[in-house]
Image (cartoon, rainbow over all chains, first blue to last red; front, side, top):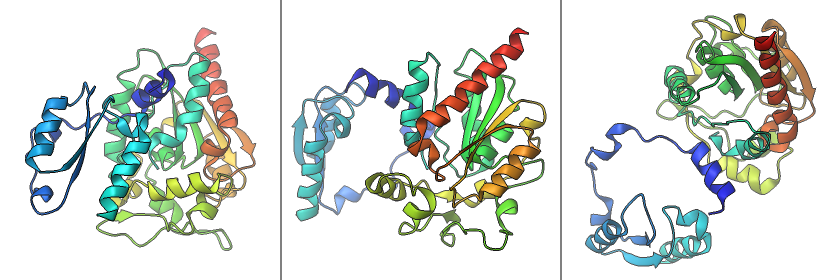
Length: 89
Length: 220
């Protein structure tokens, strides 16, 4: 992302509620539905290894992209392609 | 609406050296949004100008009591008075006034009709962006709409008001009434309710006027 994009992102981001990270998900949709996963390999927010683990566990069709935590901004084309692939599956 | 529509206003003010934060109102309840705004204010060291658009006017009217707030800027917004809520103000629209296309609540949350959104909310925004805004609406909670003002900050602090003269969500006469009641310095700009998206220069200009206005006052 450009410096300008980073600044607007920082200014507009939501602070997550503190219990967001401690609550367990109530239902796990990937157990019964197909899934796709984009691993961002330069992610400093969610470790790439953790992303790979989650993707493998859910047997997602997995893509890796050289990106920070926001591939939808840095690599929108790939993200669109993956969503299209999912929609057409 | 979420804060993304403020991007252009943000760039202008940053370029002019202001520290700018955009508050993402969850719009579940007024009390919540006031708390979220105060949390953002706490990250600012200097006196701040609070800017509110539409329902955001209710939020800044209440959150504006925070000692850090030096002035209020209303952009086609609800400058409510003590004991008022947005719902109490919009329940009796004047005859002939355009009615906002608010759909009946679902689970206590309101949305605007997507098909009518561009013409009602954003007639001067390009069609693609207006569609994005319609499809990325933040659900509007009944408790946000019904939240009443305990103490209107404009009673004690200076305010500025931008009347959008082609607004089909909040009728311009209602905007003028609220602005006059609040004793605001008023500017009128031809534009839709989404004027912060369609005319960021005019909106940023009024915010700068407010910031300069309170600075002069503090210095005198």
